[in-house]
Length: 325
Picture 1: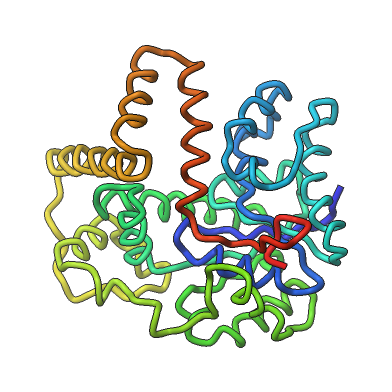
Picture 2 (picture 1 turned 30 degrees about the horizontal axis):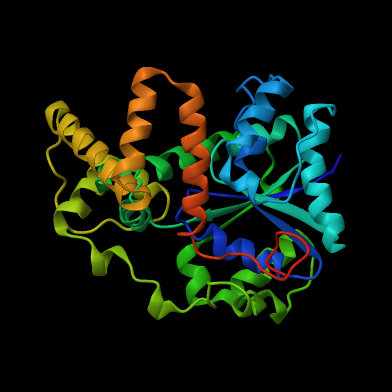
């Protein structure tokens, strides 16, 4: 088993892909893409999933389908998922290896008890705005779900590991002074900083950090949305080091939240229609309503195929492994 893999953690839309590309561009570091599938089926108490069920889940996982990894049900669960990282590490010949985990990252300790963590944090107002822009939520109130979940997970993680096993960096600092941040990260990992960490821009759709491109909630959010986000976060916003606006909180009761929930569900549905088309979306809803699992599975694979044509390229087409280099 790998002794101390490095996991890049934080909410989706927090800059984790950018940081992962930088890490993977270092000659001594191999970094896999999203690795949630390796921990999501582990129970909170550490109970590992049956291998047949785990294999069935992986068949439907879009990220796993593009990883280049192969499921081998004859191996014990820890050996299998550790082998995914080992394969990436040996394929590059790197000294250190890691992967990104957005949710459930505390469960990684059940497989890798000595793992280390790079915690990526972005202003929750920016995360909520970006989540809505992706079509994952219909409004910023529920666009906060991913940030809040990751924050709660991080609180649990801090209780389980020593401070020397985690470093926290912010998206703001990364885009405004990427070299200083990368030097801190390299010191934490145990490697020397090199300009090659920026070479990913030559092979992917992601560019070198530019502060002028990192537009913030101050530029793009309405006052109503800002007030909604800050109302839901309460004291958590300042506790995480983010300065609140001067706007007053919005009065939000149960009726308002139900209305926001309905609005968000409709927004997510519209996002799926835009991505997959009305016909496929309707077929999937019907399959779920009738409990047709075979049809749901068939459509899930089709959705995976379509999603691959709409996401940004975050790896090299010419690499022997699914890596930025």
